[in-house]
Each structure stands twice: as structure tokens, then as C-alpha cells.
Image (cartoon, rainbow, N blue to C red; front, side):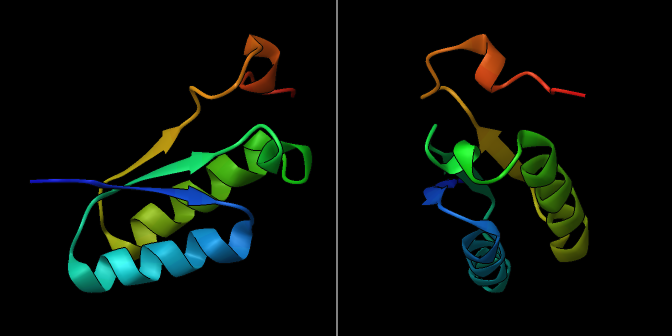
Length: 77
């Protein structure tokens, strides 16, 4: 099985990507850029992805390797 790898820019694009992937019955890898995470907290993105993966009953991975600092991807809570 192949996975789509798509970049999101906000919560709305996460939802749109997952709706389409659900219709296609395709697992997905979601990637956010460091700029994306300046506008949406990692915890919020994680919560959205977890909820949508359950709602759409599909495999989902969150891709974070474009970040230059571990502090960018560590939970801040």
C-alpha cells in the first residue's frame, strides 16, 4: 500500500486532506513546515490528527523532520 505525503498549512487543510484520503481509502503522511507551527501549536495539531484519524478510521502519520530544532517538535506542556 502506498501513502500520500501532503503538506498542510492550517487546521482546515488537515481536515480537507483527510476527507479526500478517506474517500480514496488512502493512508496519509501529513507534513507541516516550521512556519506552520508558528501559527498552530504542535499539541493542537496532534489533537486534530488524532481525532481525525479516529473519525476517518485511517492510518495517519505526522511528519516533522523539516524542523531544525528539537524544541520545535517537543510538547511544550
